[in-house]
Image (cartoon, rainbow, N blue to C red):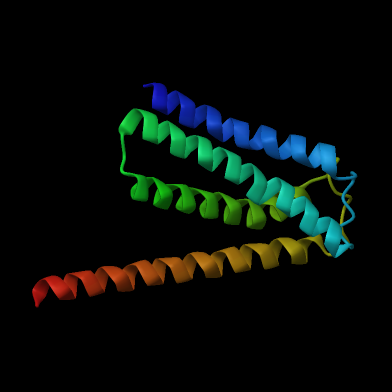
Length: 144
């Protein structure tokens, strides 16, 4: 029960950490036409906050579930990469979807949203295809 509560709180904590990092280190509203500003924003909102929360999740699972270290490292990496990619691709969609204090309305916001969703869709399709091929490979090895 404690682990479920901690994992739930960590999800909320990730949002809080992201917001605090952005508010502290980024001048708002974000200047979307300056690539360095966008990259800095995405780094603070994405990999840094995901690193902290992934580490907390790993430590929590180690304490309560006694999972082997190499499995914990895999779980940590998978969570970090998954959260990081999710944040990088979904943040622009959320920021451009409606008016907010973080960004001004962009001239080509529909294009930005569609591009982001297309890339995310392509990555998801590649992952699904890769998983399916791996599953076929495993099942063919069992038949041999």
